[in-house]
Image (cartoon, rainbow over all chains, first blue to last red; front, side, top):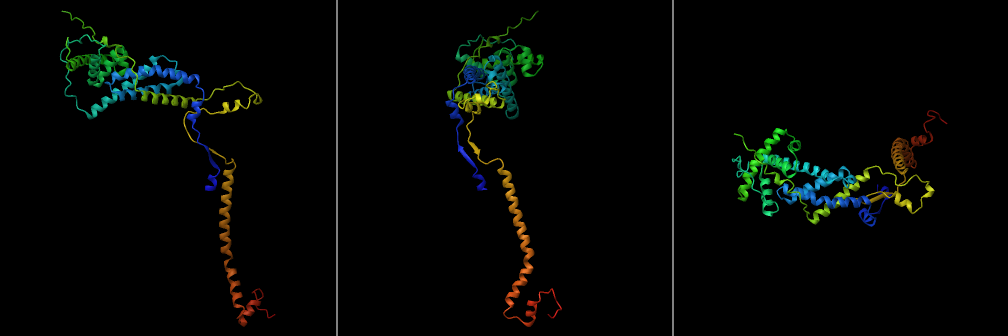
Length: 200
Length: 149
């Protein structure tokens, strides 16, 4: 068989990447770079507070979102508005919350420090959202909520969806979404005051 | 008594967490390369649009031809090009078949020839000390058994 192999020869291990670097960049590549430079900090900034400040989780979700967008249509992605990209990001976030929900249900008992809200009329204090301390408190509070309540609050208030839109994202009825919102708001108020010590 | 509606105090959170945050440069560079690789691999799978209008072959210069034929590729890979002609595969098969057939035929032929070659050898050895019977046998090959001449 060695006689047969003599017919095959390695012309030369050409590095296509080296060839590409010497070639002039195309307009599509420049457009893709501009889209990437604009979208990356927005998408990463979207995920980071919504995943409790965990950088590696935010990076994973950012990577999934950007690659999903490019796979849809790489050159179309360069011209589409950023809202379309955020739609992909929101679905990735929802998938992440559902994974967490399954993991918690499977492995973890209910957090003993979490307490159901008892005060129906408690309201959030007026928050200075430019304060790093306040923002960290909000992120930490969201991270400790039950996943379904957290996802409901995130989509309704942080993302600005209306109640039907939130129900559609979660795959529940509007009535169920309103119930989740109500429980989520009470839980958030109670937990936020416990974590930060702030009271109205 | 009517209940006073509770204002939605969560509305203040809307849009407050949509700020741009730059990730680490190492992550950004790795992701940029993957995005370009993904875009390039998808572009390869799409049928290429004709880059030039239909031209007569003579109209394209030698300098233009390599650029038109150059395959788009973004992945680093090792190129192995075979120098074997297309007909070599069938030639290979035929040569092996002939060789095997020759070996089999040769083995069968040699087995069939074994008895007559053994007789001839014993007669040659026996000839110096031939008995009257063996001499007669030597002369008489058997075809004319019974004849005295």
